[in-house]
Image 1 (cartoon, rainbow, N blue to C red):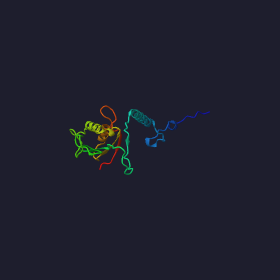
Image 2 (spheres, rainbow, N blue to C red):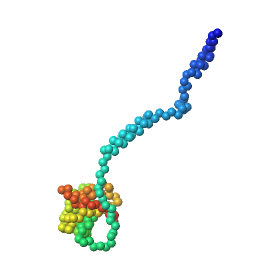
Image 3 (cartoon, one colour):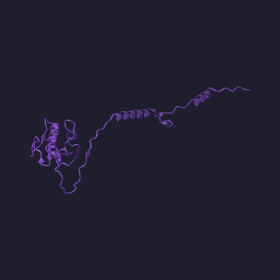
Image 4 (cartoon, rainbow, N blue to C red):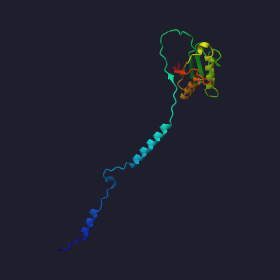
Length: 183
């Protein structure tokens, strides 16, 4: 048998065809490398789990404004304390009318003006305690209505709620906070 030898051209063609064909980046066959994507997803998931586990939320129980139930006269006199948060301070209204500055009597004006540009929460707490202790029938009163003018920041409303809920000793003043509409 005669030996068949391949020519240089034939060997070159066989070598060229036997090598794997490399595709250009725009011709790749649809394989998607998802490892970097999974790395990002895992990092985001771990971050979310870590931050959610250390996030605490505090809640303060409040009550919506009550609907009117007609003109029934209360059996015992109530304080019916309302705290109106205005830009100049706190205006308080009670059963007898507007509380005068200093919380000593009734009359017009801002009951607790701002101190050095800040709302006086300590003064509000002292005034609320004084009003609650003004008469024996007010001792059992637990409700207060808080109203705020539109430009009042949310943090001031929360500070007001905290101030009227408990006194300096930690005893309840007016723990049942409800919101009213400022008029």
